[in-house]
Structure formats: C-alpha cells, structure tokens
Image (tube, rainbow, N blue to C red; front, side):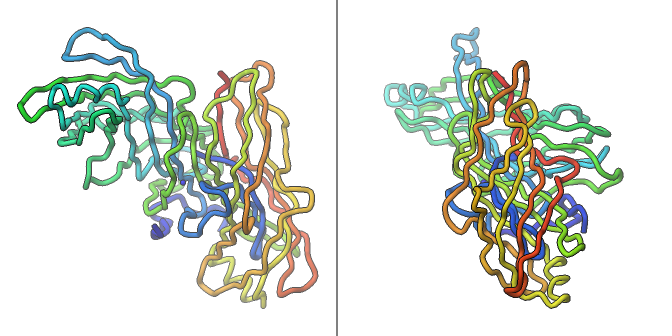
Length: 424
C-alpha cells in the first residue's frame, strides 16, 4: 500500500500514450483530463507520497499457506496452516514478449506462538533460519517460476520471545529488497504472479548450546495469486523493472490484499486526447470468493495523476485551474455479476478546483474525504475466477472557472485488472 523518487522510463514500464491490483472504486477526475479513483490503504484519498508512477502496481498480500513441519529431522509430524506476507511492485500492463520483474520484493512467514512456548523450559532465546526456497510463479511466462532463494538465504540471531509468534522475514536485515525475475511475457493473453512454494529450516537455539531444528515445507492453500497483468499493445517494449515505488501498506489480514494501481488512460475533451493516470487502491480485498458467496470493496478511494507533459500542454493553452465532477467510472466483471458497474454515486464526485504548476505532475486526491464502495460481485454459475477490470470513465470539467465540458476516457488497452479471485 516515504516519499520516493518516481521510476524513470528506463527503469520502469514507460507511460503508455505520451500491476494487488488491486482494488477498487474510485473517482475519475482530471486536470486537463479526467480523474477516476478507487481506493487506498487507509480511508480517504491516496496520499501523494504513496502514489506510484503511471503504469505501476504496488501491493501487499497475506496468502494462506500450509506447511509440513519436521522436528529434528524426523518424519513429518505436523501439518500447519500458516500465512506468508508478500509485497512488491509490478507493471500494470505488458507488451508481447516483454521482459519484466516483480521488484522491491519482501516477505515473511510467521510461526505460531505455541512453537516458542518451550523457550523458557529449554532456555531458547534466539533462532537461526535458512531459506532454501521462496518461489514466485508467473503463468504463461518464461520461466514459469523464479526461486529467489536458489542460493540459500541465512538469517541469524532472530530474537525468540516465549509465547509470541516467530517471524522469519526476507530479505535479511540490511540486505536489498528482491528483484524477482526476469520473466518473459507471452505474445498475448495474461500473466498471473503468485506464490508457489517455500522451504525454511529454523534452528531454535539456547545460550547453553541446545538446538531444536524445525523444517517447514510450505505450499499455497486457497488463493495464491498476487496480481494479474494483461498482455497487448506493441512489441519490442523495454524491460519493465521498476524501482523507487512507494510501499507503505499496513499488514493485511489473512486472505486479503492492500494495493494501489496507477492505470494509464487516454481522455478526450474539446476534441483533443490527453494522457492521464487513474490511480486505484484499496485494502481489505479478499483473495478468493466462494461459489455461493460474494465480495465487495468497502474501503476504497483514489487519486488522479496528471503527468507534467499534460500539465505543460494545458498551461500552454491558457488553462490555469481545473474543477468539475466525476460522473462515471465503470468496472467490468469477468466470470461474475454484475457484468458492468458504475461505482460513482448518482450525484457524482466533485473535483475540487486545482491549480496547475509547470513541470510538476499533478496529483488530485479524490474524494477529499471518506471512501467509496463497489459490489457485491457474485460468481457466475460454473466460473472458476471472478476478475474485476477497469472500464471507461467520464466527467464534466471546467477550466479557469468557465462552463463545464464533457470529458470521456476509454477503457485501458490492454486491460488493467484490479482483482483476479479464484472461485473456491
């Protein structure tokens, strides 16, 4: 979900026309464009310092996993349901055959407090851990998975507190965040990044030299998808390896995600096209949906990004301020109902008067306070996934306080997926 430098074109996915997914709802508005927004980690609009660049998806996911536990090298004695907490950065769209990474990656597995309950009896006060597998898959890509712990990662001196959960996190303290890849996208279709597996050996140690080794071999259970990225557009795009994106998300609940997507849009008013970014974000988004259930987005809001090139173009036309009202932001649903949903309330969402500054990108938080809601989304009979995709948007814009003009924004192409929930 730290102000940081924005990724440049050579370091991240280039802004088209000029990638928990994440979630939903929002406002469209504009600054010489139209802004639509959906959600952010807390309630209220996305803070400008938390907003990734256009074309960038940031997120944090808490995925349910199941681990087979061995004690002291003996046969498996326990099947243990745990969670893996993963966050990272990815592009929201991919070109045919484009090379890409999941960057700024980090993660952790938390063992329950009963494992540390023996600490006072055995004098255990520290733990060492060796991670030999932490594999992130990318469907339809080459390779299909990358093990970031191919060279085993060793962590030493992890504090053990009796009766408190033991968290084994990556990377090690002081080490760089992970760049997971490279993957090569297919020529068409879509790519889903997901957690594949993890293997950790944890040695619980006492000051007297006693050691209790525990090995955990972990696989996903339930939904393991991190995000889905559509493939399309022109071939030959440069590698999408994004650095410097903000990651300020609170730890999600088990089976949920928090994320912000800044999707590239092209909006038209007064007969002219303009490039903008519609930022979408939310927290508390479920990773799966049951066949007889549904899910909604209840804590969403957003922001509009106007690239400095668009800002300068408007200033050159004599535009100094923009205001108006967002009237439409459509979400399209694959494998569920409703098939199309306008998440903007009937009265619209106001776009406050905003001043343009040359050579500065403009970020317009929307709404100014509170959150928006969308859903419920219900699986269609026989569907295996429910996918929510950003659709078209529209607004009424007023420049320099003048009469309002209609602005329309077409659906991004290739598609931008907010969520991709397996039906369980």
